[in-house]
Length: 259
Length: 310
Image (tube, rainbow over all chains, first blue to last red; front, top):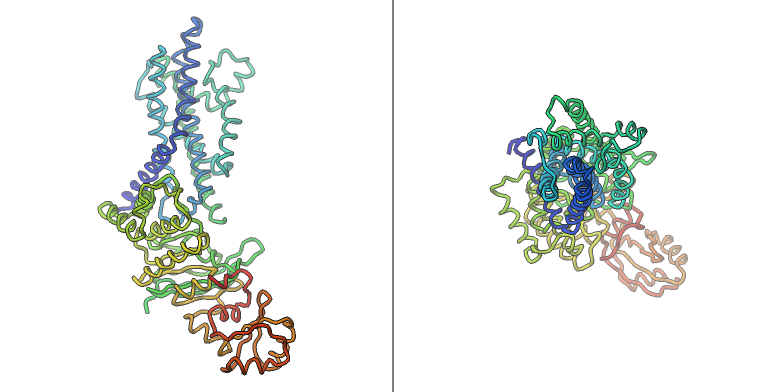
């Protein structure tokens, strides 16, 4: 088998294994689906019910997908994967195998992309039922989602490798850090209703710009020219996340060798 | 003799602790070599370096004549590693775990299913094909780990205390499996705390202390290094008196867990031994041939972390 063939097969093996494990842990999968679905339903109904807020319904659907769904599944899911590999000592077993670090990383990204695609379908089905619509370019929206998945997985590797030693810590850390970031990123409420100080602070939150980019396409049919700042930010954030994630993963492998 | 593994002068330090101190070993093709030694003597560190889980501070490891540091990924495809604690994916079925590692090791797709089926059969895992790996008992998980380690037909199989976490029955089963591998010509390097395990499975044994090999050879060779023809085991109300008398007679004395072992420099029968120890308060006495246990105590001198019996 050629080195590239092996890399591809290893990537597919890792992603298939992760998806199979997800499927076998159905209870976790239900909660994974219920949270964003419930958020979509609750916030969607609030927006749809209130005449003043109805215009924000399309943006709310995009925000909840980007924040409540992808944040927890791609970022939280990656942190959980790293913590579980450590706890089960499979990380050391993988280290003794010829698995290429890039194949492992890409395998996780691929698995998270499949899960993200399922979430997009699920959430937009609910959103459609409530009355929300997707207005923009599917290609541009898809690109933003793809970059977001890469960025979330990169951050997941960074946080998982540096901080999450045990699975229990993942839930606590995500709740403590993640939920404020989501609120401040305009996931559930538009930025305009926040106090000025919070709006200024929110500009430092990468979640906000990811949300703005996807909302811009999905709810307001904006193109590349109008979203150039958000897209540039997303590219840079994605690159930083991936670099941090890969570096942390390499450090994790070195640290795990010392155990 | 074709050498599969050649280790020369390994040094490894963790902080202030010098774990390996010039460790050298040679493993010939088809050999089953056991690494024995007290806790902390560096057995697992040696295996971790061979499996590239650790880097040595100095020294060289060669696999079939090629330095391993320069062929990292390639070397990993030539080694099968079975860790001390099974490292399996608990939600996967046994055949799925084997299949997953087959893909990581680059087993060609056309051969993969047949290889997985062959290992499932060989390790009697077929009845457990519908049981998640995490629900298997410790012994069966270790069997599965062995199957996983063999999936790519490695040139060298590395077993880190393969029976440490299993019950006696499972240990006997695993011994039987490892004997089967030995008989089929698999080259194996294993660490163990069980002298009986090493005596049964290994055709060569390396005894370690303070990070290096202090004695190496076949079990009969190691036994022959013990300066005695037989071992007298004595239970006495007055151990000091027995020891004093044995020293006067010029016999080697070894004390372990309150029991005294005396090495006879020449063959004596029980009556002659009892007569020789005359005056000591001997409660029970037996004469046995020299075993690996005696060789270990003589050559390594620390039995605190070694299981002397099954």
